[in-house]
Amino acid sequence: MNLGTAILAISITIAFLTLLAAGIVGLRTTLEPHQDSTWTPPRLLRKKKRAGTAPPRRGQQRKGGQRPQKGSRRSWKRDQRADLLPSDATVSFAAEREAADIDEVFEALDNDLVGLVPVKKKVQEIAALLLVDRARRRFGLEASRPNMHMCFTGPPGTGKTTVALRMADMLHRLGYLEEGHLVHAMRDDLVGQYVGQTAPRTKRVLEKAFGGVLFIDEAYYLYRSGDSLDYGQEVIDILLQVMENERDKLVVILAGYKDRMDEFFGVNPGMSSRIAHHLDFAAYQLEELTAIGQLMLHQSRYYLSEEAERAFRDYLTGRMQQPRFANARSVRNELERARLRHAHRLASDLHRHWTRDDLMRLEPEDIFAGNADLLLEDFQS
Image (tube, rainbow, N blue to C red; front, side, top):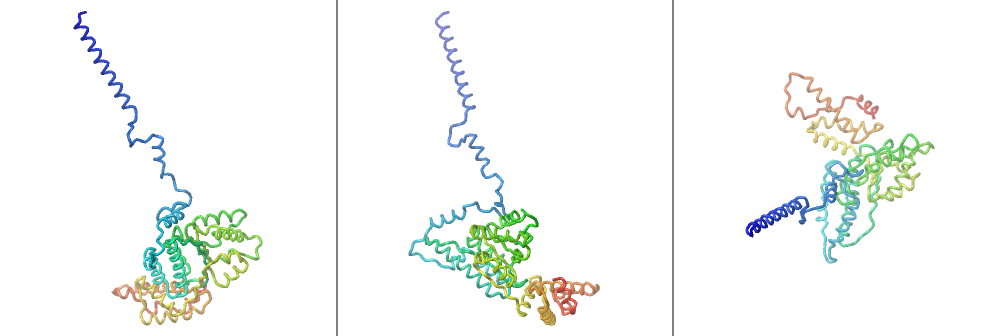
């Protein structure tokens, strides 16, 4: 082999080895992950994929959105401390009301409910307390959390449930409650029929109410002094514990007739001591009931003729003297019957042409059909 042939062979061998080395390096590059700033190990990728996709914990999901995570109120307080105002700063409660957007609640109360001036004043006082509390926190003036458990007393149909709904909304807007919902409950929702049923049933209702308001109507039926086998006392004991130890989670509103609630508190002093606000809903007077009826009709695009208004007032005067009169509920029931009579009166005259005003106007014959209606409503009540 001459020198030229040897050099050529060596050159070919070097070129082959160079190509082989380049191929091996390229293969390793494709098999190994890129070591740049965007790469995440597969184990961390799996963790990221799972984060935020787990089903919500019990009680976390609510209508209209997610319930805030536990500790959100503490985080909010930390944010308040982080944005403390200097000691020489000033605050305006017009601005505070606008920030909390509570004027809408007051307007709704005025639009929905006739009268009830003392009740509306109490609602405004509670709002003022929480507004001042918010302003104090902005200066670092911390105070104990005010007790907001309440008792609503008064006859049926005086707006207790409506005020409770508005109260829940207001407490949420002012940051006292995490949510603005209301859970309505009565004895049958809380008290079981057999041993071991009452505590789970009560706790389920409480879990639904956490973050909002638990409204217990006719609360005095929880206690039956003559029945030693009744389980209502177990509900009361659970409520007492929750109202004291879980005040940051819910507000409890007890409702019912005033005399019966007084008796209930008399035999359950622990419950009475946990109620901070008592709101008494007085029975409506004739003028207020007439205004309530006109408001209901206006919302349904009806109205009373002058003669029908006099007949309606006469009906109310007689009905108010009957047992089990239910104030606004009795007004609503009579107007529902009036619409029924009005519809029958118009539809019975098949060939007459009725105007738009005819379809809206109630006449005396639509309002009062004699004492039979009084007896019928008394029986149905």
